[in-house]
Image (tube, rainbow, N blue to C red; front, top):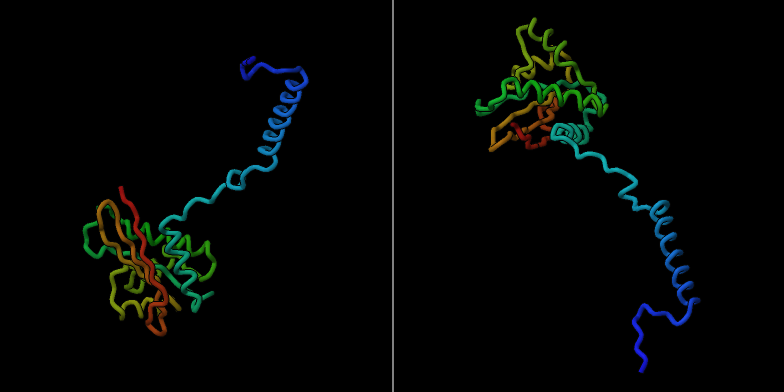
Length: 183
């Protein structure tokens, strides 16, 4: 019995045939990677929305009753009075205002300009106010809606609750909560 190693070929033609097949397979693999690339590798995924963008999306979609109506975002307040970052409520309110303007579903009043108008009338955009004060702010600015917000410290961040209120009915049209990591 004549035992030859597996690499010993009986003829040159079988080696050439194997070489051609391997060459064609390599070319096919190279071409398919160039033209038929995986869709996930060709199209990059958009970044995940930020917590503030989540709030803006939810309030915009849920507030369809106030579409193209005038609203303002009040300063989010610290319910427990223990959040470490000073003026965090103002920062969140400003960022939410910007995201709502980007959405384009409401006529959002500028907090800086209208805050000055309110202070001349003895009012403010402070989020910690009663219904009578909210009504005075709404009347002074001829608002259709107001967004209020509360922050609660939890672990290494805060929970932010936002509510879109209809001024005429006093009803909450939409509410959303997100967690924001704070370092």
